[in-house]
Length: 129
Length: 129
DNA sequence: ATTATTATATTAAGCGCTTAATACAATGAG
DNA sequence: CTCATTGTATTAAGCGCTTAATATAATAAT
Image (cartoon, rainbow over the protein chains, first blue to last red):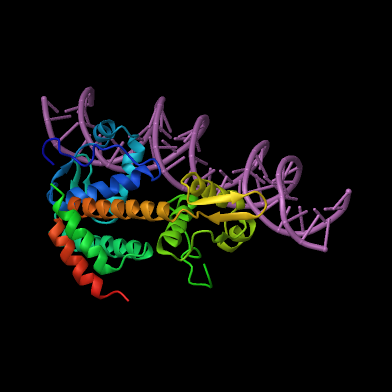
């Protein structure tokens, strides 16, 4: 997690619990490779300060990520991304499948078939940097 | 909105405000054509009972949909879907664009390019009924 | 040993969403 | 007019999320 291009430092959607949004952003960092297996996570107080949230709120997010096996904590040394790369890959695939499934379900509910959705992706995809 | 295939009668995600979920489901019904312009919306008390939510919560959703112009209310006659079909179409396109954009952004954050996303849609699309 | 740094736990307060129980307002039906 | 049906407004309570202010526990560094 070098430098400043963090997805972490964005403001939060006031309609969703902050701790779940932090969980989601950490998954993105880990699954995209922006954070590597074994990499150290900033200290709770430090990161909470940086994100502008309460340490308790951040810890709740960390606990959830540990529960899922993506982070582990070593007493006083700090907190780290799991070294289990196979787990990272498996959870990533699973999450991607869910995102795709929910996307298609929502498009269908709005009256768009999978074929139409695919077409929109083809168009919109070109406009992304 | 004939018969029982309603997307309304699903249970609610406990992590999201109920009233926003009701707003979203009504948009789906209107945008997909399951509810037609000018069609009557069930009475607040009746629909609230059917959905298992408090009338106040349902009314909050209805107010939001009126604020966006998708519903209007006629004093004691009840509440109706807007007759402005052009508005419906415009808002539908807008929402679909947002859903597509957010989908691609999330996929990208997970390390998937637009091309990869498109491929996943192509595969997953065939498995839908 | 002492100190600093780490994660973790506790308690109280505030705020938004939801519910319950009402009451009020407007109008079409009888 | 009277009544039923519609939307709308009000008040109080409960619950989860967030914050603030602490305190505790464990260990590496000195």
